[in-house]
Length: 252
Image 1 (tube, helix red, strand yellow):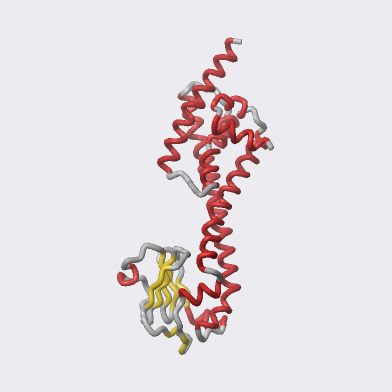
Image 2 (cartoon, helix red, strand yellow):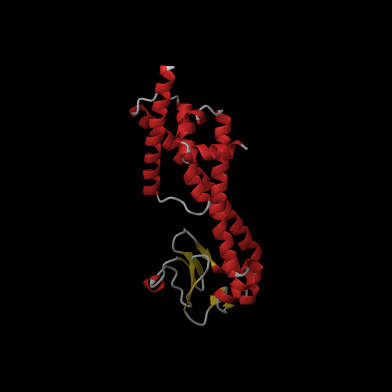
């Protein structure tokens, strides 16, 4: 498959870039889609699988991380204030009082996102979530902890939707990054006096991002400052080889 040959050329052989830029645009677009989709799928799916394995399934998760409770007048009743860190990088807080906001007490010694449950509300520290517990109690007939199994389908569906939304947002983020990088690299190419078409610059942008995509595929994404430095150094060597290629063609 040509993809593996192009990976080798794009990451190890700067002198092959003039050849890479002659590749059909349709092949280069497929090359980019392949890496964008696969790298984001791996990068997002791994935490979901890890979290599921650490929580040992839905039933065990409920047993370990959610305290006993009852319901009264469509409100949740907890015996005491309860705070617990979960494998989902979320800290659950169960407050017996109707403190329907994140307090300083809630934030103390907490480094994860917070999901707070009070007798009347479910609140998130970083998402715009404020759900009435009375709605959940009525719809799913929740009277005690054991009844939470009724929420399994809802939580599974929500997890799948969350995964898809994360996937879409990450893919669009990578596409936007490639588009912006194309314009920037086009300006840099002019500095090196390279008369390249916009199509060639677009291909170059995709190929120069091969290694960042591979690192992301193996769950080692580059910090932005490392990414910028890497791209700058790569482009310098690539443009130098392209200048030499142009000179060799002109002298023939």
